Length: 485
Image 1 (cartoon, one colour):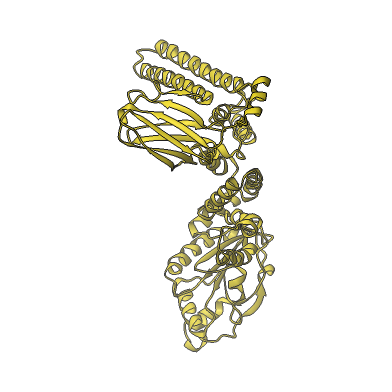
Image 2 (spheres, rainbow, N blue to C red; image 1 turned 180 degrees about the vertical axis):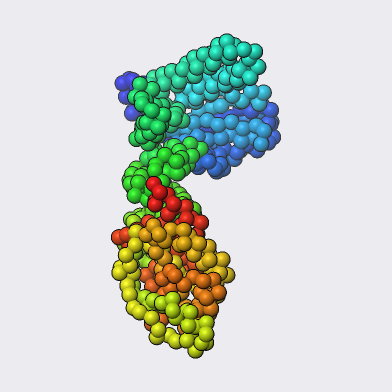
């Protein structure tokens, strides 16, 4: 840290010179690139963003300067695809760099930047120790006997312990610098071995729980400087996609925690919200729409001022339609018209019966008593439905004696639709599950936000939505696990 002495402070006051230089001023010496253009770029997460350019003079000198300082973070001097190096930038953005293309890590020298002297000392240490790690790995591969292997493994363990101790010391001794913050952010969570006891399953559980609870110890998602490094997005995606249990309720707690940290800076808030929002919009994991719409309702709709009013209106409407069918909710109740098996049998002999829209009995979804109910929306003319329906019927036959019921709901409520439906049921013999439709209303389409077919929901005995957007194969797998757990 820089010391401020009283006499110097008084002198500067009288001469009117500011203690803190404004803007940025970086002098670069790269003799091997005389006459060429050099790009000064920043990392924004894992992307490189050019910030300034300069042409190297015939004497090998270049200068980058501006009145506004850059955000702190990890920056790059880019000469060409084969020659570039990175460096740290924090509050003090007035220094010089001398780079040797023969060894950009070992021979790059910084003057006026204590942070980068530390950073390059660390990089040189890593280069040396990684070479040793690679040598040990080769020795392990070529070991002639178990004794040689054992000796090499002990060397590798000792080296790892040395490196961890070195990093810990560098972080502690330089606490308060961006170098310390950056180095700390690179660390993974280390589980204390003394707490790992019990069976293999218990040990795995202890390790996972510890990592989950301590994953954010080393990384500060509210620090704008870390957003300008390749570390940020990797840490964020690892945390939400691998560390946090992939259950909507657990993830909602996690994203709220991240969003509150992101309020420290407008740029972080926007990045965090867009990244999380897109992550769950693109997720293929069932139930993640609940997390997506939670972000939409709590943050995006009220606070994403950069988004267009048209998009916000569309998102709000989609939220309204989707919310009733989140996994864990009680399925919306609605009336249906059930068609008895006898009607399909009679229709084989009398075509007029097929077109009768008044046959059957009225019931509500809530009246169905079953351990599990498969709510299946489909239509006889749908290509996917023609394959899915017989496959689902096989699943029904497999589990019907274990308390599973299927509501096979034909969604076309015209007379022509009923004729095609009856023919399909008779052709495929699907007469002994509950064949039903809604001849007088299409309200169920809005209640379940049905935009395409087929759509399959799995409900428990309380009519709570357990799973949705299922294929017959997925329904088979889930029922097998639930009924035979």
